Length: 240
Image 1 (cartoon, one colour):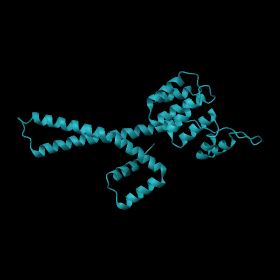
Image 2: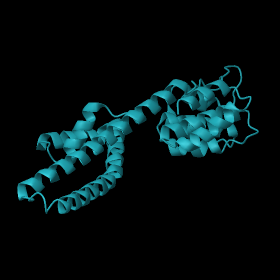
Image 3: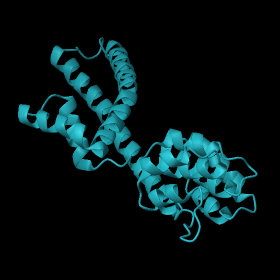
Image 4: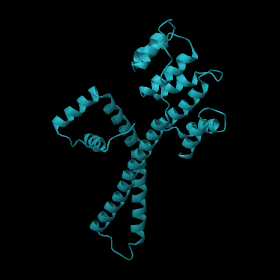
């Protein structure tokens, strides 16, 4: 999930209670009515939650090192309150820098990964719908072609088929339901006509989720096979 730079500042202000009452109300309203904004905020919270323990540990270690260093110097240089406070600010500042760098690197990597997935995600036109005859996938494919994802998924779920599993996986991805996409794609058997397509898309879904080891394992298999996506898998693998 790409998070615009201005949203990171807004999320940080919301977390630190520096927004006005009016801005808080507008923020809360956006969480209700803007699904993408809400997803970006959830991603931000996960990042902050993951980095905070690291920040605390780093700060604890820095302060411990500071105390040890100051204790060693007590016989040579008198330690005043202001001197120690200055050293404390320096320690906290260095840890804050580590935190900022961590956040920047996280979002930079995430943006790069999302761009890579978007670049190689194959366009799926759906099954052809014939006017002369009526097929069991026609209604679902008509909805699929019009990007009516929920309707298409509901219709496909009524058809027990590897074709349904494949297209539901694509729909899950389009709706950013990546865990569901994994389940759907993994339901497609190896002897399916959709296997090569599914295998490649599954690698991209794992990549989008940040599950790099799973993605690399699948890409390794594809690039060493006679898959239609062999060259694409090799290029993506080189970028990881």
